[in-house]
Length: 434
Image 1 (cartoon, rainbow, N blue to C red):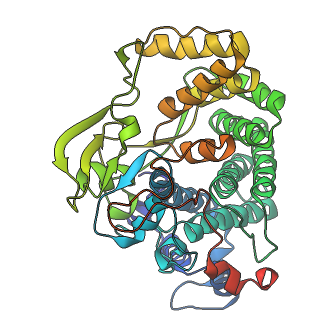
Image 2 (cartoon, rainbow, N blue to C red):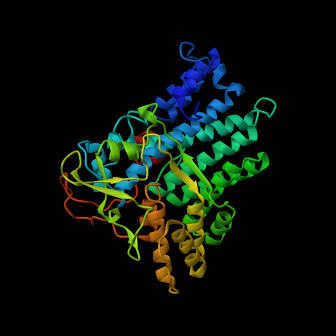
Image 3 (tube, rainbow, N blue to C red):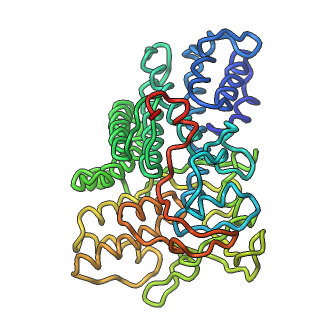
């Protein structure tokens, strides 16, 4: 039984109370927004779930698994959508809801962007704001539950707190990196910097709880996350200090499964299998010193995308519907150190990464050249892992194709980089009404 597969959890549950709690969580995650979820917790609905089971410490692990699953679904969408906005992926299907990401000019009233259906895994759609917000809310809600229970009531409580705090941190990170603004629990408009500072706090709490409970996997995950948040916030020395603590070879994945369409790797589904999305041209033939770069393996098929408007190029990083997507890795930690420190330290890290995959060494003593190569290494090493868009934003890299160029499906490319605050948030949050 995988920890995040709600279908597997339901089938494996042998007790009536667990089955009812699973049903409640499935219902919660399908509702349109946190206000509706709050109402569910306040109202007795014995035909669906007895309220006592929503506050049952025996179900703590199930709550945590559901929070992780909610994040993984949102992250799955985020990787594809931000890949479309950046220069990683191009739209090639007949579903107009994805055109706005690639064209970089969609409206904040677009229902699919808002995920008005309240269904993170729904078919070909790429809802973002509500899935990420639900994942953030659920992680924070479960944290409060765990903090209200005792160690006697919940086995491994501190380790579970570490886990949900780390996933909360990554939810705030996605909001801060990808969105122009966001709001939390009906509060005021938060800037990307506000959200990244909150992510840093969540990662700090996760590290403390993980160290107290001996959960090294979550500690390392949160160290990478906090290093990333600190790098984004400009506290480079602290970022590098965190990144140095991550052990060589560490990888924490977001997991996916072929057991249900809702749990499938969406990069594989939309590109390799569905051919509704293509790898963009800047990634077709990457090499260094005349040697092809094996970190970005792309197959140019000679065919066309589903809508017959673009050349079809397939990524080879995720080869199945069950392929995991890296969330926090030692590789990223090394590149954080390289960016934070620059100079020969960065050159040494770049060359260690090159040697591992058989690429020639890089050599430079010029700080601008070293930084440019570090950014390029991030583009390749972290391909289709959710990182590229924010690198474009923070370094003001040129968008490709440029704004004003014709969009294959009609219209022209726009200038949007960060994702706008959707109308569904503005209309339902009195703190955001002008």
